Length: 493
Length: 115
Image (tube, rainbow over all chains, first blue to last red; front, side, top):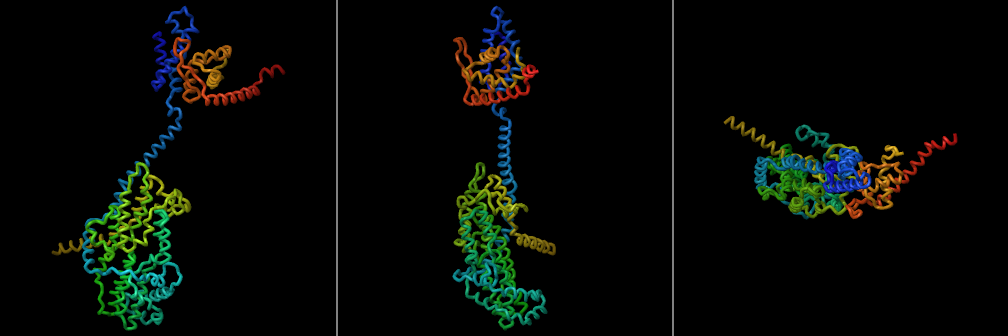
């Protein structure tokens, strides 16, 4: 073939990117050129002349190559919108996966760990308190044969109003009338002289002597709610737990105050005061953090009333003991939360992990935490880190801790796996979950964050970091206080 | 008299499909047939026919194979596919509508005769 024609054909197909197609086009055009030579060019012309004629008839090599390039462009250039949208989807997915991974591992997880892992100084102080409380044992473990929950519910209010004694309002009104009676002796005198004081029946408080523990989960209104949680998803379980009817246990303190004043009027001050230990023990046996605080406040009231009513023959719980118990009760949730992350209670705390030493304040606060996370972490989507071993360890630990707190049977429904089909993408009760991130105007059918792969890790870590208050503030205050006093001592020394 | 190239734009693929619906053909055959059948009125250049053939093949309306032609050399022969037949039908329908509409709009000869 003539070199000019050969060069022309090569140039014409040069822009076809696929080498197979380029070769094929070259051969095809060459065949066409031969046809032209045979049929449309005079035979008597020289090869050179024929080639010139053919090239003159054909489009320029530049134009031809551009047209052939366009006709043979790869598929992704043939469908630019499809290519663009596919690239966009892949890029978005990549950004979401990588972004969520970085956000969780670099920011949220360290922040959460910082919140849940107490400072070593706090650990030292807490261990010192626990060692001390283990010796004094202010709340000995009770037997669990006679539950005072029904009796307390009747007088304190909380779960349904059926059978409730509404004298509580009369008691509150009377004490509010002399609101500063605990600090003002004249007001106390006036209260003791008020004719209404003795008209209120407080004899039911003496009945508490016949009970050995309190377990509000046995009340039908609460127990049925817990049972219902068995077939719900994680978020619904947390919702059930958070919306559980609360027995207004702090009202027991009000009733007890009135009871002591009445006993004082009857000349039985010591008998009235001595009941504080029994009542506080009962309240503490229910196990929640709020119960611990009410139990301690009743013992503090006992000290106050002994002083106000000049009763010197009663054995009072020392104030440092009460303060130490308050601190450990508040700090246990922090230790327990950390334990769920690690799948075990830290070694130093293991021998103190007892109901008598406030452990259940932490267990009650946090056993739902990991349960609530399970729908967010399992089953894993591709490229999501598997948290299966941690969840399994946390669940085993939760079951073990609930056993220590006598709640393993009652709270079983909370630890149950989410049944198939119970964790829908669109849920009606998502408002509470999303509202934690900020107020939103929608009420119905929001997307379930635990069903949005990759994003769900960010959501759960965010929710957990929002939901965890600082339980170790009391120890921080103590550290500051002791730091100042030791500094002062050093300066004066 | 040759047809205005502007009128031919967009019709070369229809012409190719029409000819391939009759039988398999190679590029040179197509150009010469178009010229012959239109009595020289329509000439589709190589710069139009090959890009159109490659484009139709990429879209799956035609397929090709190399065949020995007249015992001399190999030729790339194109054949219409079922989707090509479907496209041809659509193009033809559209073309007929266009011609009819144009005939209604520009009835030059009829107007002259009536006048």
